Length: 263
Image (tube, rainbow, N blue to C red):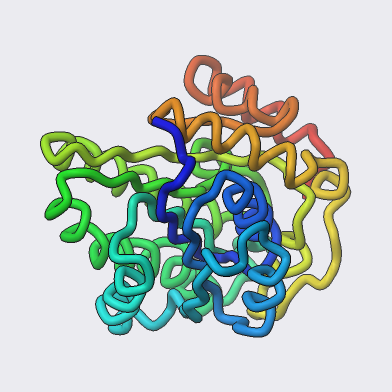
């Protein structure tokens, strides 16, 4: 399956991975629907796309679950259909479990998990009716194994894997594909925007994030995985080996993570 000429809805499109996807996919003559909370930033991204006339802007807050059906109707109306939904929007966390307010865990679940589920369920009938569609959900390597300071983030990302694995099973008969993309460290503002123990932003980069894959490199690898209809793809540097250690040598992974300097 090639993405050329497809109509693709991207959430979290105002920065980072979502922004990088918009630029790459616009070069492939895709019609794009870009969503995020910040409309001004969406307009900036749309203007820099290869074919701005093929880009529609749809402000969206994943925390507003009840709006997902109406937002989906608007998204379909732009170009008459949706071929792929890329669930990219979300937020991270950097705080010790014992110090973290419960409200932070609720927000991480609401945005990273329930908001994504709500939007996916709103789009699903459209895919079923068309007898085709592709859900591409960007989770994290933290959806495969854990790491200190990310307890709520890991929990929400693990939940996405359970949900989308079942969606794939239940709707294979409808010719609907599901790809889970698990990034490692990517050079975005994810660390700066990560929630701390009281819910405020960290406002500082992690060394590992600064040394991660550049966004253009990541999105190129991601689109290749999507076109191959992979069930899961682990994209990063040496950190991707953690997913395999978790499967075969979980105690070794535990020791490796504790010895690492990643925080």
